[in-house]
Amino acid sequence: MAAEKAKYSTGDYLRSFLSMPVFFLLLILATPVILFLLIISFGKLSNFVVEKIAPLLAKPTLAVLGVKFRIKKHVDEITRPAVFIINHSSTLDMFTLLAMGLPRVRFVAKWQFQYNPLFLILGRLTGQVFIRREQSEKAIRTLQKVVARIKRDRLSLMMAPEGSRKHEGIIGPFKKGPFRMAMELGYPIVPIYFEGNRELSSGRYLVTNKGTCTAHVHPPIDTSGWTHENMEQQIAEVRKLYLEWAGVE
Image (cartoon, rainbow, N blue to C red; front, top):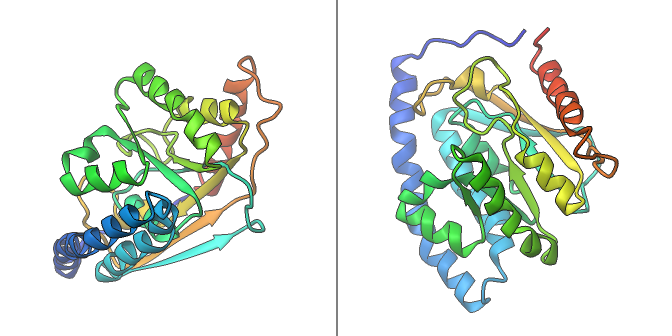
């Protein structure tokens, strides 16, 4: 079974309180550089921003939190576009996602992130996808609209099939959106399992124990044989993998 969540110490609260000003200060400092790169390249350096600059914002923030972040690959380099999926149950997920610096990836994020002006500007300029998760049909239509751009630019997508991190249990129910997108795009599913994120920080806010988080990148799952008739069964099989990785019997 997954480790029990630890209680937070005074030091944990202090580091957590300090981490957000550090992140936003780095974001504010990086924004003019990012805007300059995007303007002079007519947006062609979006991948560079996601792959190289985003980790420079996330990794110092994790260090302030006292979190050591590792990536463990259970597969060779993934050379073709894919729909990456993650287990989502911690506020830490945002930082570990950015720290990975995945190649040519665009994040599918909740609409509310755009309430922050910096996230709105940078997200729109780098081609991130914002959806209203509470309105599933509208979310699916939004995703369908970006299919042509994703295919044209040979981009990957990063999605959380649980939707919100607020769910019962260690692994919540999986929504169909990421899997429909993979089928529509003709992409494989690449599961990433975050080990340690939930155990270190499972509350509503970013209060975190010191410790280690590991991103396990697992082999791609071929979706070429998936159909609308067998999709639910296929999704259940993918979720079963996450339950196994989480140690849920």
